[in-house]
Image (cartoon, each protein chain N blue to C red):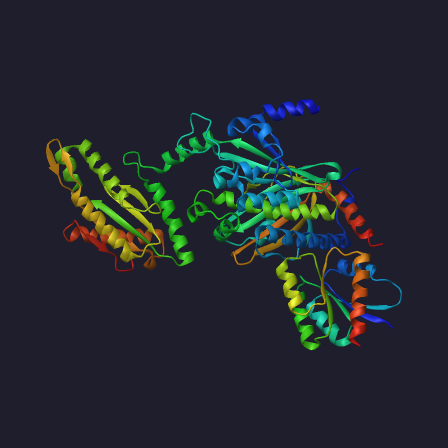
Length: 209
Length: 126
Length: 305
């Protein structure tokens, strides 16, 4: 199947609506499960799905992230659905996360282990969301370990403009009550997995006749 | 007799799924609203027997809309639909007087059972 | 291939443990046997917590639940956890670590129909790497002569601490310290003795501090001390104690006793907007202490000039 051209690599308006509802269900379940594990009230807000070109992802990310120091945690996942998750925490989330994820001494939490706190927390939140999304779509997904990342500049003036690679990007603001933690999760489905995603969204609707 | 059902959900897909799960036996007349505020307006207009309410919606969320509906009619039968079954959310919905909290994803069977239970409650009320 | 997998499982230089959902040990590789001194046959089928009660702890349980509930991999970094299993360091280059430093992962193993059957834990010994890293980091932030933190560290830490004090509305103070007539000491007794004075002064200053305070060499014979969670008035008490200790410092050059004194300037973060303003305030107070006869403590009275 040639996925580089044609309509099979783009989600239609209706498919985006379905994907949005699937995300709603998946992230609702993920927040309930995370809440139980973390023993805190987790709010994953309404997800918003967009189709965009892969090269425009940094722009989308910048749109959401105003000024101020940010920690960024990136993970790749792959199953039939593949892509990556990018999580943003403001610097102010550090102490809350440290308390939430393991009762470290204040000193530990605030010094050298800063990056690791964001990585572990990021793995929980992004991993939980991906796991439930995979359940909803009847997929099985594995991930890479989380790593910290930086916002990359768009390579605007590359000599040979690459063929458009449409990806689906979902943005989900989240917060954890009473711990003063909030952030943003962006999940992308890769260009290669869009055809599978389309088929599986169709299956999802078909179960209701 | 025909029961009037109001579906309040911002997602057209979620409303479509729910519609497909409600038996087409002529016993139900279905209305839709796309957010909490719209839901409240339709509630006043059509006085539905059963309301299905999503929780996370723009403009006015489900929890607030539930509270407002209950203020207008404390006997209104509101079923909260959500995938987020954190104890705190469920507890809050029940506290506000929700008839039940229904876990997403729904199925034809779960909706059939819920409607039967709602019907029973409506019968005894009369 | 199965027979080969078993060989790999026992030969690999990584600890591998397989647990069932009730946290009972189902597999225990040679590496684990070797470092725990618990043989395979004793631990198999038994609850892990019977052997390692310290693992029955919210952090371990949280990660385990995460792996079971979501079928997710969890990564337990050395930086946050130091170690999971309390083993003795195996390496000769373990530095000062009491326990082997470990980098661990927890991941699900699935059986038929992708049903989650077991949780596998992998344990990597990273003690040597951590010891090396610690040494490198230390070298980078320490002053070679006195062993206390250097100016580079001060600048980073000051910004960080001031930010935190501001964000959480907490107190924070700094003390600038200068050895009186240090040039004279150098001229009369030579630079070798000057170094001794610097070292002795640094260790005297350090001995009076809490573990949360930071003593840094600001330059020459000048030191700067950061006191988180400390009001300016309390910092003055600390400074006064330092002054008295310096006076009591019994230094000798050959047979001759040498007396030194220090002047100190104290400033609280409440009145400073930036790290440099805070340092400037403490510096101005120090200058005032010098001008009014040395061997004394003066607290800044507010805004930097």
